[in-house]
Image (cartoon, rainbow, N blue to C red):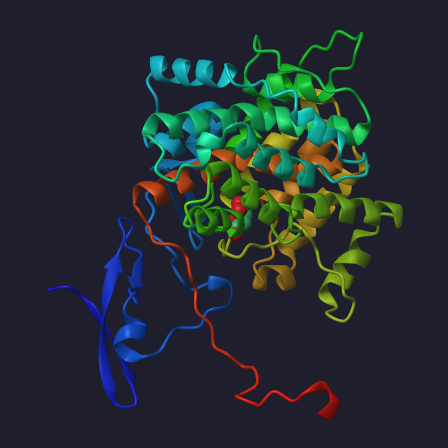
Length: 428
Ligand code: MLT
């Protein structure tokens, strides 16, 4: 017998279906609540509300579990590559070697962007934040590939859009950086792998022979894996709701880039470094700033601590912390900001104030430190997050489309004025 939940309103009982997932998660299905009971539910920020069923990523906030298509993030970060994880997220299974080779080759074939995109890029002053430039160039693909606007595009056509998205994102990201630096752009060197190709576009200067440091490329590949997907977070939910209107993959993902830009979401890694640099400039007294964080009247909040979903620790943070240690040791980086970060981490992990409030270092706390050690400028940190999250956005957009999910249209509780007559301006 199917399980149900009883909802009693004004003495009348409504039986609501119970839905259970493959990891025994339980939901009350309220799809027909308004029709049957004439009421809706209210859940600011959707913290208690499932928007969909998905087979892509499972996370358990209490146990600190994160899996992609059943594979643990620990396994994937240690043994896989970013393109292989992208394939897994998007197509559901780890690829055979020939499948991965074809995927990588197809991507290489599309790393160039139309020269006219440079006219769009040239329109952005150097003061432009790279995320705004990235979102604009990514969406501009709808102009160069108008067939992507077809809501009923063939599977082959969708595959081409997926490959183009993955191929051109690093080019757009590197060009957004070069635009901020006022430097000429670099074209992709397809003799290199995905992350090395990006690093060379990012850092190579005219008349200089640029060699990609394999330590940096490997660290970046792992960072991209750790950011690849994260269930129904703010930017992914944005991609889904835009995609639910049958908007193209490029405009849906451009919306996700804009959602990720916010300092409470992908912009948090940038805020972490700005916070650490402010503490360093103030003399590096971490105890002083820890006490400010505890003082709710100070208006100061420790960025990079705690998480909306993880209640004990962010599994990605554990992996990224070790990566940070490895990279800094291999690169011989001695960064005073890192010393401050490690002091804050030490206090946060033993201070009852932070422990009681589950304020432990999250993925953003350490990713900013690594990006800084890799020489990536602060304004580019969220762009790196977007590059990593791209396959997750693609996978979620593709799943929504394949499941033929309806257009997203949440309701509200109205709290404004009741009916009143219009008064002509001369009589007000
Ligand atoms: C993410 O990876 O998207 C962030 O941790 C935010 C989230 O999952 O809500």
